[in-house]
Length: 239
Image (tube, rainbow, N blue to C red):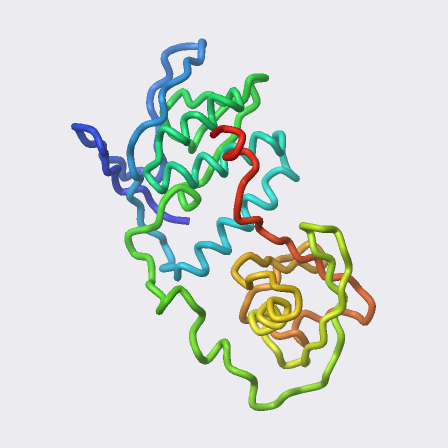
């Protein structure tokens, strides 16, 4: 994904690491907990990302990680702690980790353990922005991507299943609409911000620039819409 080129510390001292990952020597077979380091990891992405692309990549990781390993409540706690730490609210981040009985032997969220000893690894791109992030005007998609297509294409109806309330709805779109445009139509219909939506079909993430006709969704098949809720219940409990 990218290489780690250093760490900006809020305390005295500095750490440089150009190996592409963060590591510290273990103190032996016994794993000890370490207070969360008050640091911002500096890294450079191999492929420059826009803020929107980085948000999508983060959401994709957090939404799918619990399906592969670990406990969902621990992943939720790590996500809330990562958000707090990125906002430099280290006290809240530490409280969330302590409340979930999560230990960070290296002081970084890149490697964590729950009380049962299960290991959790959070990628660097979920913890801080790369130094070569591509800025977007007002955080919005480019005008070309959001504009209506010249050829409206064939009108079709998509069946969507919303994750936050487990309901199925129908959305009228055109075959030449991009997924980004479909998200905005869903926002107008259901009031769900497009930036909080992640669309999946056949187990694959539908990218914003993909067109409906390219997704090859048979009539009547369901598209899963993962809705990222703004407020994490874990962070509320930690407070």
